Image 1 (cartoon, protein in one colour):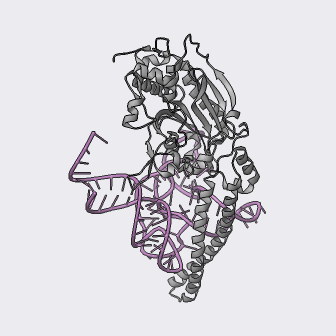
Image 2: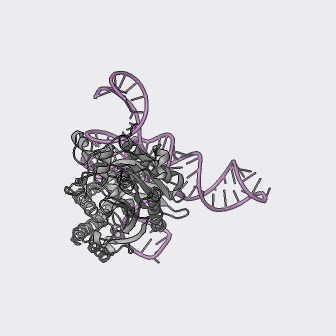
Image 3: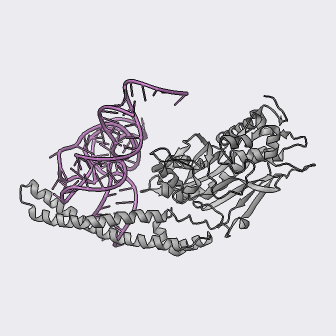
Length: 430
RNA sequence: GGAGGGGUGGCUGAGCGGUUGAAAGCGGCGGUCUUGAAAACCGUUGUAGGGGCGACUCUACCGGGGGUUCGAAUCCCUCCCCCUCCGCCA
């Protein structure tokens, strides 16, 4: 969430940011109305509490001395009764004020290109050579089904649409990619491996910004009086590791990486990517999460993005990096780079990673602070995260980019130690 | 699922309903002493919001949320979490 002080004192700046995101700035009006009333009332309530505390203290003293206190007691009672209704009103305003500010998105960083949608994103760089084919390259789902390593048909039977079965070398390839990515990030990039809970509570979802606004995108566990949500990304449990904590300056930066399955309802995407692994209700992802000092966060965003890109470099997959424009960025993000990998059959770059700096937006929601050495008070840390990478999409990209005319697929060098083979062929026997 | 016990400041741990934002110890920070260090001694040491140039001051916070009361860390209700025993179970 945004700094309430900032919203109040630099309202124009916030309105400008909302407009750049293509939003109606009127959501601010309601917040400011409630917040102003809340502050006015808080002032009154605090003054009356002070009076009440003084009187109560007096009662205590008199009683201790064995004197009669009924006079002051009556006064105190009157004051106290007067406060009660105001406190009720204040509680209500507190709740509504928070409800409103939780719906306001983050302010884009000044370096973010202005734009209304994905057509106005800015390409930052391209890496790798596009593969040349002497035949018409097939889409990954056709390759996978033909090789007997992917089965969408039966996945539909046992779960529904947007699920997949990985089989044989397909399953092994998925597992190889997970291990390859985790090894790279832990051994060479300095991240600590985490395996977190896959279901989380409402507070965690609110901390990273999925709730309250995007509940429709989440799977929720219903047959339990407790409330659990399936994680849509490891960002949620991993960022919340330090929720409501005050870290020491010397603990920062903290780098975590986590492999988890991710679960998304994909509500409203009915026509999109209905075939293949691109858009699934359940998919695997290796996530990178950073907790850093505010002054370092943009430098850290660059290095995090490079850490994710390194996976594609080593796999030999061509990709490009784009800076999302203001209109295409996620709710909580201040700046986002998408990494897009080349899919030959579609002749398109498609998102395989999204790397964001949230600045203090999540830290403020989740109350993640740090203390500078020798300084009084605390500051909010900055959080970042990025996919490093989406595993299913990486597998798809490998199938498409390294497919051969005979239907087999060459395994990238970097994966061979994990796969034990250098090529997936038809009817491969385990 | 059944029966008990407990959640207090960075940690350990006190706390008759009335100067308790909270004893004490440890840790941390500053100082004295020392060639240096240790030990010892002295001082200091929570978070958030509001007011004041400032010294400072007010309000809230003892797992979360309600309630009783002039007054709640202390009493009541409720939820959450942790521990022990029994049962069940990967």
